[in-house]
Amino acid sequence: MTYQVAVAGASGYAGGEVLRILADHPQLEVVAASAHSQAGESITAVHPHLTAYGDRRFCETTPEALSGADLVIMTLPHGQSAALAAQLPADLKVVDLGADHRLEDAAAWEAYYPGPHAGAWTYGLPELAGQREAIAASNRVAATGCYAVATILALRPLLDAGIADPSDVVVVAASGTSGAGNSPKKNLLASEVIGSMSPYKVGAHQHVPEIKQATGATSLSMTPLLAPMPRGIISTVTARPAGDVTAADVRAALSKAYDGEHFVHLLAEGAWPATASTYGTNAVQVQGTVDRDSGRIIVTAAIDNLGKGAAGQVVQCANLMLGLPEAAGLTVNGVAP
Ligand SMILES: NC(=O)C1=CN([C@@H]2O[C@H](COP(=O)(O)OP(=O)(O)OC[C@H]3O[C@@H](n4cnc5c(N)ncnc54)[C@H](OP(=O)(O)O)[C@@H]3O)[C@@H](O)[C@H]2O)C=CC1
Ligand SMILES: CC(=O)N[C@@H](CCC(=O)OP(=O)(O)O)C(=O)O
Image (cartoon, rainbow, N blue to C red):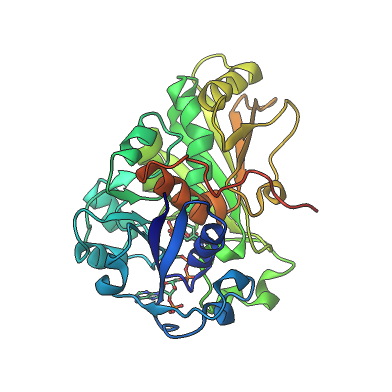
C-alpha cells in the first residue's frame, strides 16, 4: 500500500531533506511539494541534489494544494503552521516540524515565541515512554525541536531512573548552520562562520521549555553554540547526581531506555558520540559517565539536525501514523569520512 504525502515548506532545508528521504521511501509518495517565495520554481533548481524530482515544480502553500494527500508534513517557519493546519480537514493527518503545537503551557509559549499559543498536539518523540502508541493513534503530531531531540534523549533516562536532580541540569550544545534554515542571515555568512564557534541565544533558547516539558526537569540552563559545519547537533547534558551515582549507573539508565530502540544507540564504553557518524541518518548516538572531579553526571548525544532533528523524525512519525514499519525509508548508516 502506498500513501500520498504533501510537504509544505519543501523549498527549505528541512523540507528538502523530507523530499530526499521520501524519494526513496518504499510506501510514501510525494504528491505536492509547496513553497512560499519560491512557489513555481523547479524543485531541482532549489535542491540540485534531488534529481529524482525531474522537472517537477513547487506549488503554492494553500489548503487546497495539500488537502488531497493522506498526510501533510509541514516544515514552515514558526507561527505559519497553526493557521494553515486549522484550514485542513480535521481527519487529515498532519506532522508539523514547526514549534507551533509543541508546548502545552501557554505561558511558556509566550515567554519564547511571538504570536498567540495555538495549543498542543501529540509530541512527536516515539522513544519517550508511551509516545509511540500516542503518535500512532493521532491525526496531529508536533515534531520535536532539533536541540530538544538530542537533549531530551540524553536527559530523560537519568530522571526516569531517579539518579539525577531535576533542579540542577546544565546543557551545552552545538549545532551546524543548517539549523538556522536556508534564508540569508547576516551572522550566517560563510566568512563569519567558518573558522569560528560562538554562543547565541545565550540564556534564552526556545527549546528550554520543550525540554523541561518532555523530561520533568524543573530548572535547566542551556547554552547553544553555532559550529562551523553544515549539519549535526551534539548536546552535552550535565546534572547533579541524586545520591551516590556511578558511571555504571548512568550507563545502566541509558541502556534500560534504549536497548531495543532502532534509532538510539548507546555506544560501547569509552566511545563518545560524533556528529559525523550521524550525517544523513535518523540515528542518535549517546554515551554517559560521571565527572571524576565534580561527581556530576555527564551524558552526550549526537544527531544530524536535519535527520533525527528534523526530516528523519518527521518521517518516523508519519510511518507510525500511517501504520507502516516505523523505520521505513530511514537509515542508521551514515557516510564517512
Ligand atoms: N533546520 C533544522 O535543522 C530544523 C528546523 N526545524 C523547524 O522546521 C521549520 C523549517 O525550518 P528550515 O527548513 O530550516 O527553514 P527554511 O528557512 O530553510 O525553510 C522555510 C520554508 O518555509 C517557507 N516559508 C517561508 N516563509 C513562509 C510563509 N510566510 N508562509 C509559508 N511558507 C513560508 C519557505 O519557502 P520559500 O523558500 O519558498 O520562501 C521554505 O520552504 C522551522 O519551523 C524550523 O524551526 C525544526 C527542527 C530542525
Ligand atoms: C543554528 C540555529 O540557529 N538553530 C536554530 C534551531 C531551531 C530549530 O530548528 O528548531 P525549532 O523548530 O524548534 O526552532 C536555533 O537555535 O534556533
